[in-house]
Amino acid sequence: MTADRAAAGELTGWAVADPGPVAGGPLARVTRPIPEPGPGELLVRVEACGVCRTDLHLAEGDLPPHRPLTVPGHEIVGRVLAAGPGAEAAGTRVGDRVGGAWLRHTCGVCRYCRRGDENLCPSSRYTGWDADGGFADHALLPAAYAYPLPEDADPAELAPLLCAGIIGYRALARSALPAGGRLGIYGFGASAHLTAQLAIADGATVHVLTRSEQARCLALDLGAASARAAAEEPPEPLDSAILFAPVGDLVPVALAALDRGGTLAVAGIHLTDIPALDYQRHLFQERDLRSTTSNTRADGRAWLAAARRAGVRPTVTRYPLDRADRALADLAGDRVNGAAVLIPDPS
Image 1 (cartoon, rainbow, N blue to C red):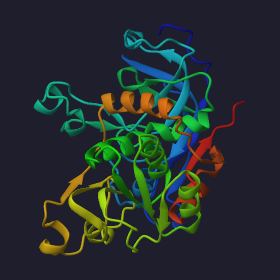
Image 2: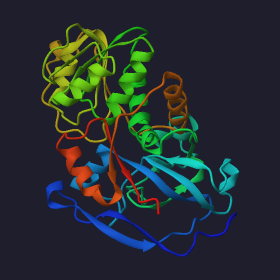
Image 3: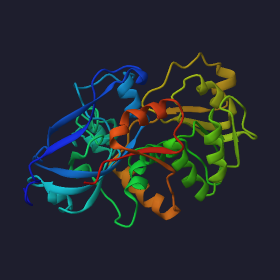
Image 4: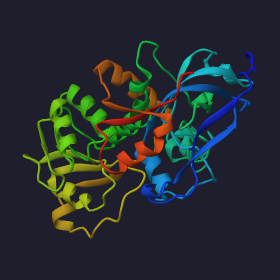
């Protein structure tokens, strides 16, 4: 290690113990020895961790667990306490503030990695699914997949940028929005409210369609041209649309709202079943339907730079780490305005 080892102590946090409906309490409190970083790893003291809808899918079993009792959370802001052998080659030093995101490993040699599509790597691994994440006061991050973060920002406002922001950025690219175009956003949670800010800053007209009245108010406050219920039609045909809500029933709704040649990008890792599509109404006239899979590190770097340039500011609802179960329940019940963020006790 390149610094004194973290003082002997215990990690405290939450793990997915019994996947199922959030009302049944799928999370369990855990106490474990603070891990020692291995080759290429960083040990961080967690300052904040965003609560992503993917965490909810993992807790409720929509995504099958890859290992038992995994600590979820992949929007991690933390201070480097110690570095394993070779970790500082990535440019990170003890004491730096870094971010840990969803993508934590790719092989680097498959055809997808070689062509720049590491998000499609068959050997990819993910924070909070394949390895313990940030619903805890300490976490291990692979240095090669960590992002340097600014010192002059609130860690709670940085956390949602690390997955909600990155995946929204990739989904926006997948939506093929033309310059000055008309963008429809279906669902308006953590990812959508960040993506909307960047699109508006870059000159797009944004129409938000979501079931939450609170979210519609937030959308208008952030500069959306309109905000309506999810199943309603936008006030004008859309050049592009992004579906953030994990609701397959909205796919034909969004496709029908597209203008000729429009594109719908689905942003989530999980989606309920899509109803039968009518070719003439939903796909004819060269409408495209695209999925979005994870992200590349290049996406992450480009997004963080773009967000800073555009002045993107997350709306956050803060929860102490010991209320992680409440944060998930609020997310499931659409009671979170913007993004939920867990804050460990700093002591």
